[in-house]
Length: 506
Image (cartoon, rainbow, N blue to C red):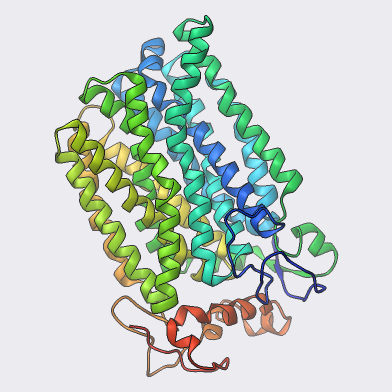
């Protein structure tokens, strides 16, 4: 099996945004829809948003669904686990699919394959059928990986954290929006004349249709890379083939990817867990109306409008001044604070305090997600899709484990589970201390002064001398040159040759 990597120059062309040598945009204009960079941004977040709406359309209606299908607390817990476990492996597969076929075809295909499961939710008639439709719908969350891959392919290092953060953050808004959308749609259908056990079933046609339309939009308007789609570039000779086995190998043997997968499991994984439990938590603990509980729960997901993008922006700001070391410190600090506020959320007993703490908690845990994908694009150039998939899959593994341990059945009350989840966040964030880049350093030390390492050394180490002889490393060479900004502010105050000593950013 083989995949493609860009190795030759394309014909000069004009772009609406300023670009680097790889034609990646060096600026991020949020309210532009200019092709191909900003158009890809809007397509990625809207499609991911639609998948989030579909995956979490059931939780805000659970008080109705559980009565209709006679669901027990264990049934609800199992369905919640199923909704996020399906995409554990689909996210890893999505990273590989992006490397093979490009993010456009990979994401649109998955969206269309999972849309029928959303439609079939309307005919669920038992706990098992309800679990199955939630399981298969959850596969669609792998579009997160294609969104991050797409942004990392379209935007350059100085703004890639921002692009990744906003795309994922606005996509994650679906988790909050569906808490408002589904109760509203349900109420409208019921008011028209449908009985409540029929109204919730009809309501699922709305997210299903939205998801389907987003896939066609990607196919019609999307573009894989700044220079065109994978297939066209390959046919025109602007791409040569690389062995998939080597790409996969360099991805899974990079320990930084595994650490980020673990830590992401306790920021994004926690977010998925809260999306599944928070509406029912407020409904049961504070005896609220369904719509009121939905509004409160929605505020958690809707914080993604600013929190995750803010994490991406913070990552880029820290990198501009302190380099990669700044990105790592910011990720650890923000995610640890998210864990602290999660612990507090489980301890407070009043409705008002719970709402306030939940919102503060959501800001920090979602910002940590944005900060994570400020680091991911620099872990590997050759195996970007695999690393993105590993990290994204780690988020779902964290969600599955957290729900199985703390929220399945009646072993723990929800407030106790939330407190223990916060402790897990703090503990599982500590391995960030171990991430070290030879050319940039880690949290506690700069690059080695004894053995000087450059960006070229790091990224070209993924290519053998034979492969370099064939020119397969050219894309990595360009990326290495463009990633010098990760040295920090000193890189802007001096002229650096390709063999210059990395400055120690403190």
